Image (tube, rainbow over all chains, first blue to last red; front, top):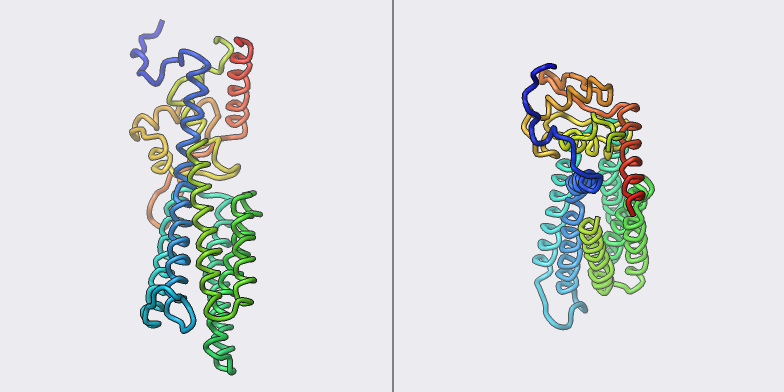
Length: 216
Length: 98
């Protein structure tokens, strides 16, 4: 007989299969929470930036918000700051959630992350080119929100395909619809459509995801 | 209860196995991140990882990120199968008791 020290509490065999299953479930829940728990916050940041930001723009343009007005530069600044804030939140939380993991999933994650910046930049530069070639500022106010909605929607569809996520599929589809439909309302009403449909769908996605995380 | 794999059937090693099993197949995790996910001390985690390594259920590899040494942990195929067999056995036991 060897003289081993008495087993520590977590070395002893578990008392029942129930306890073992509960431990498994609890631990896997923790892992899921840490790996994707930041996503509802990212979605909320975008809900606020699109909801409040587009409302601010809508309140700055002539013919927009009939209830209250905001000087256009202020509206534009609010929109800009909120979007930059949402980008920062997305980047920081995205990096944090994937800390310490190496493997095949890195490539997919990296492509996905870089695509956001690259495609958004491309859309922006096309807009600049159009402006330089005679696009009016009122047309620009239709172009930029619509194309960003298309970029965001398509990237969410990419995410849905990569990670087999129905939530992202729905979110991406609604955002593409918002971006497509909004310009038909003309300036400045397109901003209201983006605020409500775009901002609203981010908010719903954030809530749905938070609830599904809690339910696991 | 005697046909449950004794390597896995202990609270700490079960939690470690469950954590590693829930990573994407082929992914490895660094030791500090694994420690954070388990809320264990480094020494405790090392001890249990060694037992899992002895059973060939996990691979512990040391690499370098620039000049910093990094330790990666992942479940082996055998370890993944052992964990799946273990959870099947648990469910069978619970199903049988109903």
